[in-house]
Length: 417
Ligand code: NIG
Ligand code: FE
Image 1 (cartoon, rainbow, N blue to C red):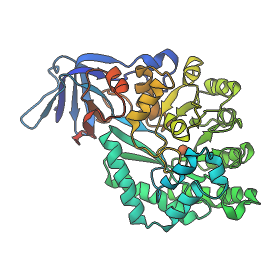
Image 2: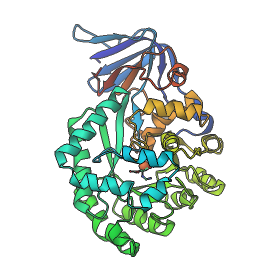
Image 3: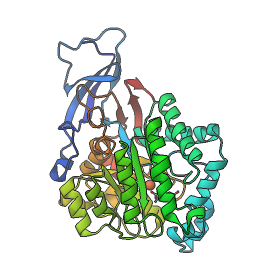
Image 4: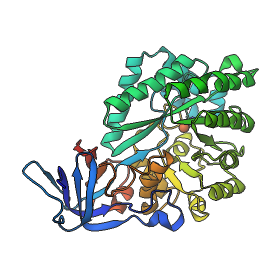
């Protein structure tokens, strides 16, 4: 076997090797660390991972590129498994209100929040949405992210806008080095038109939108904003079950602000992830651990909403719920593409250890997107998506917060930066 790229003398090679399934409890601290590590890549695939030198069956020649990993930390490409990547406009106009203490759900109820992004997304052309999202992807990649989930949800009743968002995501998946996985989230807000008859909108999502999204192959997942004043538990259940019957894997924005029972619903339905969970009940968290629903935690959103409430990451890990971490990048509740900052928040605020944090944004993130057979760890046969951090160890990346520690990103075996 011939290597096209070799990264050698890696001070700290964090492989995350192990079974391709969500890691729970103590497993979230087992990061497969190799000191003086070496990785060989052929094309877009990892062909060797070990310590010291290459074994004789891995050949190199004049075309093989060598990178020196002395003093560096290398991890799998980071996975941001919850974003609202494609949208028009921005919402810095809400900052003054937020600083005065006006709450997220009140801004939404008064026709702002998600509704104002719906308007901006409707007004934006395909090309404008594409350029804006591409710029975000460039930033994400520079921070070490190689796979991103992207939700629709800023068209709501305007199905053409929902489709436009998913088509932009599809085109960017083709054009941009980052891999994009798409989620249909028509159930993101109740349109003003249906305020007095939300059941009608639920029926439209179920009868018209989901079948069409599935037929066009535009999404892998279906998501609902299950929240007080948005979609109820019963409406969310109906929508996610309908999605399931059309092959869309269920995800849910659960118990983000009010404790509605979203975590319990996620366990009942068999959601792949339940996201946010800031207000999740004890019973809901327990049910998630029984059903192995992944808790996708988004501490950047708690930070931005200034509620002072964060998901109970320690509790979730202790009772055996697998945890992943994401930005929730969106123009309202978390306008940042910086997953490294979220990693620091997870540790400094939610008390996750650096080992748990890196597990959450690699193998568990891959599991949150159903991509664990090809991504999330540095192992033979997996995709050659890796990050070289200019950092002597993992703790350094987390503790020295708010800056970008990435030196180079390897995406599909190609050195990006
Ligand atoms: O995950 N909560 C619903 N959706 C996003 C926010 C979207 C927005 O405010 O534009 C979230 O927080
Ligand atoms: Fe979200």
